[in-house]
Image 1 (cartoon, helix red, strand yellow):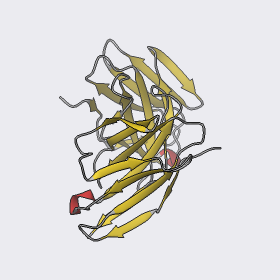
Image 2 (image 1 turned 120 degrees about the vertical axis):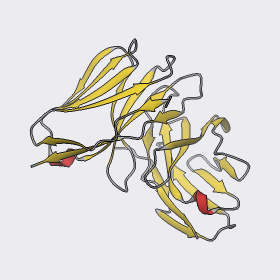
Image 3 (image 1 turned 30 degrees about the vertical axis):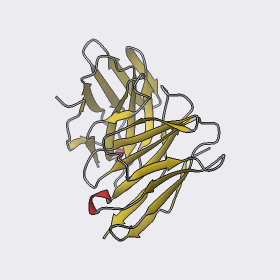
Length: 113
Length: 112
């Protein structure tokens, strides 16, 4: 069964460093998303991406964040200068259609020290 | 008012019983509704989707939607210890570029 994959599973970085989180969405899906979940809190939307551009972004997704689909399979989230409060699980998701089911990857645990 | 509200629990049910999980949402324009299961330290796993009023059954799971009351529920029949997890209600309002808005989740404990 097709699934969303993410790498790395755990990333530790120092405050101020840049990180890139990688995702491979399900191959026939057209919509891609990033969500995050701070420990003990709810899953929060960051950004949606369709047709090689951002469809929507939340207030969390400020100028420190960017997304890219560098090739036909990968979808990346870059955080330019990490802060302590960026420590969270970051989930990539994909869907065939904007109204339909979103399937989540296993997540990347980002720890900023 | 929270966009998607769930009782945080824990909801404790004995093995074999029916677990009933509830969710209310505030945006009347919401059109797609999803239940995800999340084990501790893992990612959300899609359990059910429902798009129209009424019931939708899939194996031991039944999702119920009442748009007039802005209410969606999930019933789990014959609950098993492996069902012990946090159940997340998520709502999608097309026209907002399909972002999912999640509730805080209800923790379910199935006891032996």
